[in-house]
Image 1 (cartoon, rainbow, N blue to C red):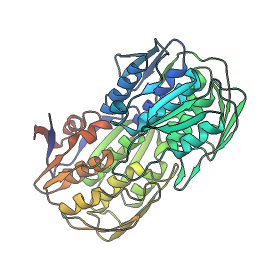
Image 2: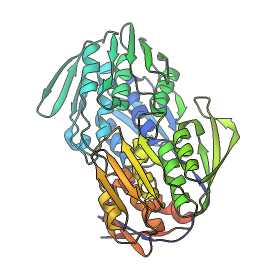
Image 3: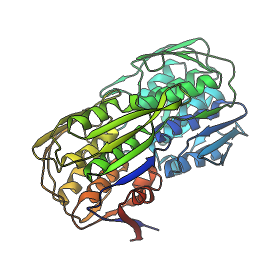
Length: 433
């Protein structure tokens, strides 16, 4: 059943919201359970269609998954014979490629459908293939699949530099392939994103030996076996940033509970540069990685300032926040410039924002945003997950009614977003198309 989201704009957001566990940490951690003996219980797994899709893939690979209370997921490998992740499942989510490394590392073989293109631009898997080849795997591309074999991989130095920086999923895949290998693997130019660090911390708790976590040289010393464990994933910094911008653009006041400020430094800095008031307080507890989990208060007012933003690998502004910043800056008086250095073609949302009255011009990997006094509600089409979020943000402040179609995109990364925003005072609901 196709649904659309209807938003009546003009209502300031007020209240408190708890940030869920990070989708981009949950997916590789779930996939890494293919490496483990016994059962793992992972807390903080959000209820998203991407999570459901990966559960289907894991189930197909002989893994039992059980949803428990308080956003926990139990994962147990029951049968390690199948090594194929078929197209019908992988096509639903590009991140499915993250089963390649653990299948190869534990079962000695993997046959994973090659993910297709997507609306944010080319996302090749050449670095994944380069990395597992460096560890001794034999790899061929055949009939739309990457087919890899290698009974026990050998440690090596793997350079993961790409045209637009290091690869997050590439780093995750090589890390997972190497943890049960022989000797030492060093990933140079490794991705340093918090979600990559979270995977490394989870693997270490399960018995891996990984050092240099959060640094450009990631070192993995192979072990003979690993076992299931209990773990709580980090809060979702992209969800947190999205709700920060939603609070600001509606000139509201929202308390965000369960964030790690260090993961949001670049986002908070840019919002404060715009004139948005953000106050952070540390709570008396930490997460599994020992980081302090805090809450922050976001208050928006009318005195926003234009800014220039460049989307970069961590610790820069995340590419997954670029569309949300575009929506916010569209109503800020003056000219702002956004440069996309990770996915240079990730600007499909611009045309839809312009339909709502924004004044945005694209020049290659740059958006030039001339702020307008207000946006107007209309019917728009979501093209990808974060573009969907930008349209929701725009709809919250637009005059009149906004209808967002292709709603399935937003359910990939935001759990019950309309219910949570409604609790904060938004007027929005779903309807059948």
